[in-house]
Image 1 (cartoon, rainbow, N blue to C red):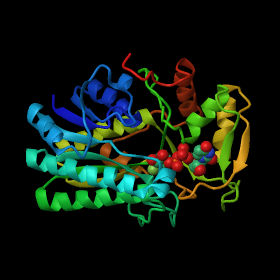
Image 2: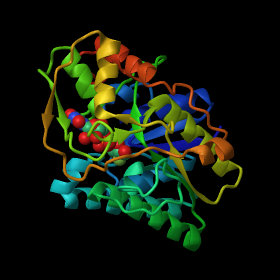
Image 3: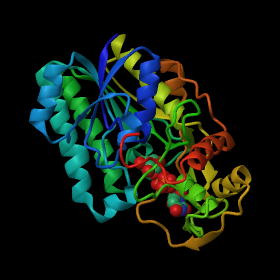
Length: 332
Ligand code: UFG
């Protein structure tokens, strides 16, 4: 079976996708700098420790392994932080990706699945959002994802590098079959924060703005199970193997939940009160993001297996209860 290089394989979505690749029969090599990822999440995999900007190391990886395709997850992902520290985001997410793509071209590797984001849309004109909607990101993070998409268009034209951008909406949940979950430092994502409140590790959750023009005043998101995202990567890889040239797909369930609805669901799933307090808006937060994902269903044959928000939160809760402090800091 083909060998696939997985950058950021020790991260949340990357580590879940590694398991999906293995189940589908692929060989995987992880490339991760462990700036954010967890060694324990890749303990059973071949790992090369390196940064995207490390051209020599990348070149050695392509020389050493018979890599046929790259799944590119490695990136900084906090939209709020990107507003405060844009240089960090452009350097890693854009310049780092450019060095990876150039190494691929030099090595003759011409298939790439790229982790893009709903953040490229900014505040959309229509919801659910189709892939054809205008792209007007509201923060530097979203702009980095948009720029890489444009670079991929140009690399396709110039060098025949074929690629699929997957625009994830809000990844959530944990694998019911593998000992994997969501664990960021610092944690800024809504669902893991709610679970930390349920476990008594935080007093309350901040509701980051309740004066948005939405039915209950809080932002609306489309939560998609991380295992469904993982499945979509395998399908995208198979589409590239069949000859796909350059495609973009939204990945979401097509259903929006407000922050308050997510808080309520977390209370119901955990059976804990989960106190909440209203706090100021977070700069750069789009108001309303819900996917139109029919294209992925139609063209990739993708069907989310865990579309229910309760089920998504329950899977995250199950992992978090087993690992109240998240991943150990060293390989298990
Ligand atoms: N929120 C709170 N309180 C918190 C944390 C979050 O109210 O303590 C709110 C946010 O304001 C937002 C919603 O909950 O309205 C979801 O926030 P997350 O931080 O969980 O997720 P984001 O929507 O900000 O961002 C995530 C990923 C990005 C990705 C984006 C695409 O982190 O990488 O989804 O929608 F680009």
